Length: 295
Image (tube, rainbow, N blue to C red; front, top):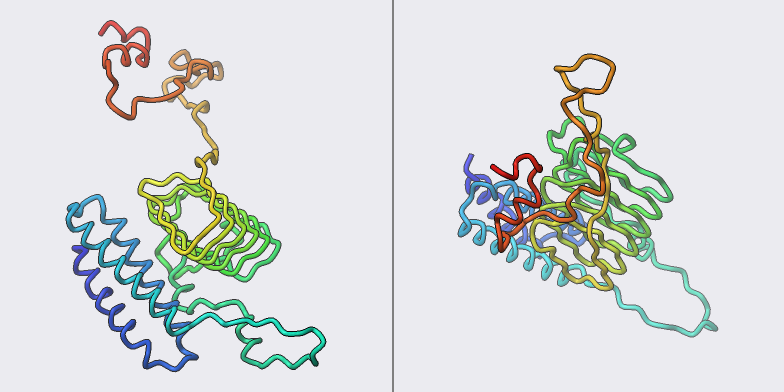
């Protein structure tokens, strides 16, 4: 199905929901904002997955409309859920009982149920745990390979897997280390504090976060918004590599096959020609196996 037939209904629905936010009771606003954010995230994922076949003009158009939706979302959330104002009072004053509303505000923000249902792997409300995909809450009804990290503190999250995840959504992490193998799509993170992220992805977006070390491999420009004290480094996560465990179907004896050998580490090229070299012949002579150099 063409992307536009999937995209337009969602886009119109988000616009309508954004315009209706002022009419909702305040108690419904958190779930409504979470639902809208999840829909925007899904649209971003659809666009990223369609990059292989949509024209560059259409890609720019979709990205611009997503940027406008995200900006409207940010403005609406700022207007309708303003941050609490704090004041300092004398310690000698008689302590007063905290109103019930303040206790409710202190509770961790809950994602809308629909958001959790759309993720195939979910880690939520954990403190001091070592988490991997085997320990996640697995949604058997979901056909996606998306992962949700929500409200985690003092955790190590290991998402390295032989089967790549499609996308990773992070909301409210503190004092955590997240290790993630290559994502087929996007990482979108909100409210991450004092964490280390080791991520390889197509698109990286970070919102409302601070004091992070990010070891990143991204195939598009990383985007940050309302975030400070960030340090970026090169992605260096190693994987199980069976390059030396070759099985030769033409050599069934227990002795080593005469058809292949290992390249010594000292002979591995330090770099590869990712751009056109100044001298093609010299570069090929340096890189090609010796017996092919005269071809």
